[in-house]
Amino acid sequence: MNLTIYNTLTRQKDLFEPIEPGRVRMYVCGPTVYDKAHVGHAMSSIVFDIIRRYLEYKGYTVRHVMNYTDVDDKVIRRAEALGTAAILVVGASACPVAVAASVTAFFERENCGQCPPCAVGTANLGRIFRGAESGEARPRDLHDLAEIAGFMYGHGYCAHCRTAAAVATGLAARLGTEIERHVSEGGCPWPGRRHPDPFAPRSPERVALEAALEEQLR
Image (cartoon, rainbow, N blue to C red; front, side, top):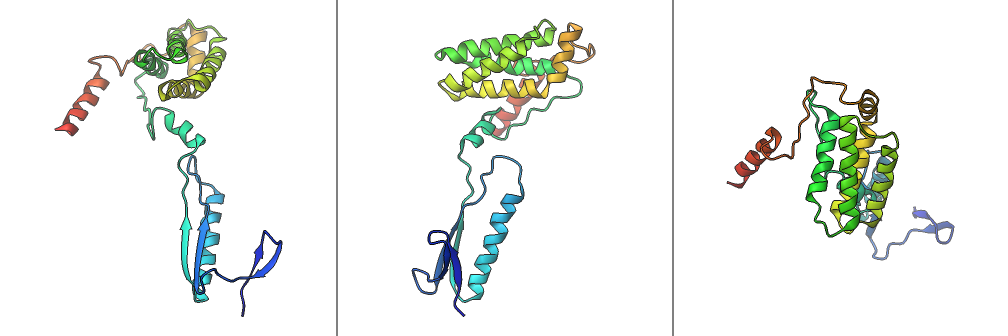
């Protein structure tokens, strides 16, 4: 029995005739892996796997190629947030807003000074988070942060600027409740928690990281 398939070009069922008799080359657009898996990923895998198996059952030699897209604006935005696949872990003994202030201060210190959106932007992001930590931030500061980060992301010359913007907005979104408490109570609502600066010279976090790097380089 002849095999017919629906041809989207002619909008009708046509007789299936491979370019090379007995051999089928099949390309399938796979998932763009920038976020959590969803049912669409399974559809592209399962449906076309069944088609490949059926063609092989019918006696064809099949070359089935599927791409996994990992270079895309959405991927870049996710990857730039603290680096590819980076995770920021805040211990229960530390004030999360203090850690956020330290992270934004790191971007402020490390900017090269050649890019005005980055130099001015990271200074303002650091100022806002330091104000949040001390409880001196104004209610409008978080709105200003979003505007500053948006300008940095659109006008910065390098990845450092865009990364600082992405990290700052991510921290503000994640720590919204904690920041509000700092501002409303005029300071840290957890006086017993540490206010670490992981990027400061001789901090326990930095000493541990440098020791691990030295061990790897031996």
